[in-house]
Image (cartoon, rainbow, N blue to C red; front, side):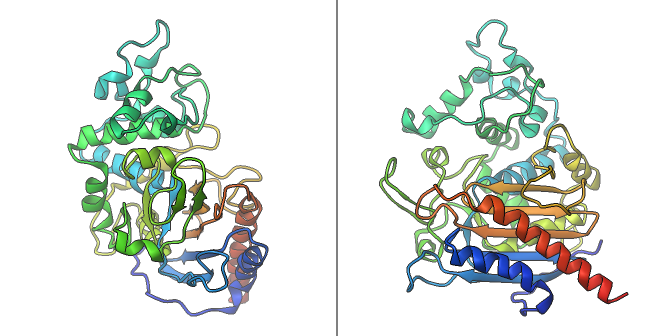
Length: 374
């Protein structure tokens, strides 16, 4: 596939009207205040659009195609997994490295028979480490150092490799392991080695204060930080870590996410023709590892967020705040949807129905367009 240079704007076209209607109806029904989305097909950005506002207030600023969102767990794919791919290509990482050899605190004082010494980077990426899915470290940890110590001390809930359970603590530890292997903070490594080469100009951890007002707020936090969360990471554990973590903390707009997706679809090649990731590494990380997972990625599952049309070779990731990216190499297609569905609180779960409806409408429009040209 050829590399792609994405346009700054995209004209509204009729064939995607059903997909737009899904999102516009969702906004009207207050599933989320606003959304930005982008569609990349055969190296062309066929949509880069937005609807709604930053909040439900009638005078709130409108969401624009270039609006930057809190990506939440899409960070795991676009930053942490991508960094692991680069380090593998450079010979600094082996997927079967044991996390305890990189972060010795993980195995110091472990319970007899816990098997923590068997946990590898591959297991962290595939969510088969046996670590718990989620821990509210922020209640007892006031600093990044304390949180890391608590994550290192976690006991396994299953034997390594025995089951698949999506684990935030696993990616917290993975992010720290990558910092040790690269010799750089995760945010600096990702910026220099991934975001700059791909011209992902809006993508960063910890947006500067001057940019906060233009970023959709994610929550009116009434129980931990006791303020509106806008322009800072919503995830509480990532907040304690200073906004830079392997599991959450990245901010970006839809165009930048498509730039990243274009590189994946091009098997690691940048628009300038540079081989950022080796093709075999892209394929290796996209290969299914178990139930609903690849290495650092989700894969389509029946009734899942990607809908009913994405091919079995597709990879994607969701973010708790209402963000997503799905990439289908068979269709040469990438779709990103960015929302702040957790505003003003986390109770609304309508995004679970909206994502598959939106993705199905996109692919049905593409199929109809192809049939019309035959």
